[in-house]
Length: 277
Image 1 (cartoon, rainbow, N blue to C red):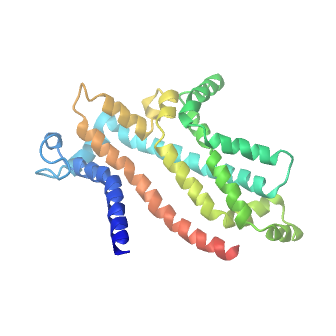
Image 2 (image 1 turned 90 degrees about the vertical axis):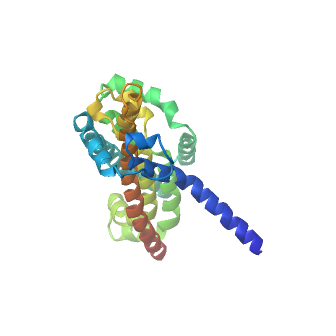
Image 3 (image 1 turned 60 degrees about the horizontal axis):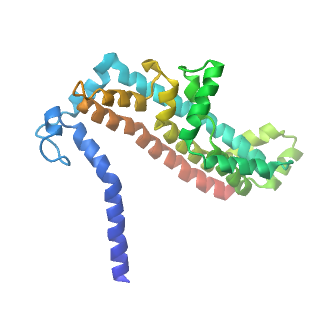
């Protein structure tokens, strides 16, 4: 029994190290100068800490393009995730609580859409955007981001289990309409699932690269992923290694903040949902 626990602990520590080692390398590398990046131990700090200088260079390089890319990523991620969460909640709630002909078939199509890799949809999305004239605009990235089949699936499963039919019937007897019931009752009971959907969609949009690459030609509209890719592609001509590494570290910070903040609401929402259900 003791050997089993020891082996399990060792395995978990090994898995943790496997995932945290690249993060540690990124943190350490962001504090180094260009010379220290290629000299000495790659997993330890250099002779001097250059983090402040590297951060200053990132935010001032290319006429301050990096802050604009951060704002673009926040716009795409927060706006797209919020709209996607609301649409997924409405669709999942309708599929769970409103019987209609073809409901199960429609849900099966949504489940099938979960299995389609997003890069396969990039070209059809580009053709649709080109035909409507929204290529190289914010809408070309925002509109595809509001669709999340996995979010609809999760919202339906959670609505079916956390929103009692008796509560809906009682609200209708009190004179509440369907929209009022959804926004005042169902959304509160579904809050843990909605936070999860928002978080997954936020991370997915923030890390999205292929769709902005196809849709956006103007660098003022680029998200962080595309901007860092452009800087990385210039390494053959100009030594921008410190900019790419430090920019990559900064790009992770909003994701960490989102996980920490939303995890707190997710836990409290779970407790509240369990009591109300």
